[in-house]
Image 1 (tube, rainbow, N blue to C red):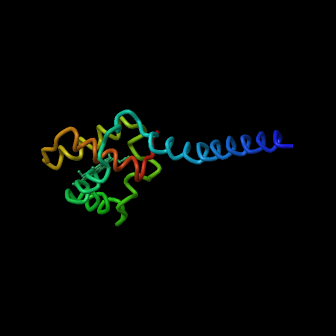
Image 2 (cartoon, rainbow, N blue to C red):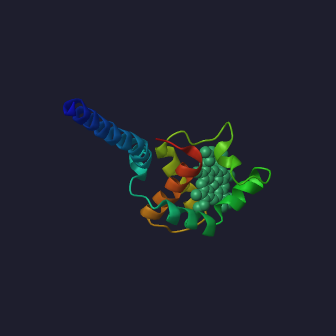
Length: 119
Ligand code: HEC
């Protein structure tokens, strides 16, 4: 009667391993699910630039006080990661801010993670 026990234990061990892998898989997926444009971006840094440059204040003025409506309005202009990069760059340029491309990318990645959620 020792054999079935052993098989059972092996089966349980395999199940346990699969359960662990199964639980970890969605997390790994979520971490990787960003468009190629935003791979390697520093989202926390992007949020800092976004706050420091007061991007939201001007948008809110135009969107009846809402700092997020610019990105969530039905007729928003940005429909893919390329447009998000381009629009972010355009607003940065209009403000006469001289940012490095990496910094623009950080801001766009922050906006993507917070509002657009392109994959
Ligand atoms: C002086 C005002 C002003 C400031 C400051 C400003 N923006 Fe904008 N932004 C606008 C306006 C106006 C639009 C809408 C343009 C349109 O609808 O054609 C816009 C639109 C956008 C959009 C596209 C929204 C959509 O339709 O999906 C993004 C992205 C954006 N801005 C990013 C930024 C970022 C990042 C900053 C800060 C670096 C910033 N903006 C600062 C005026 C501003």
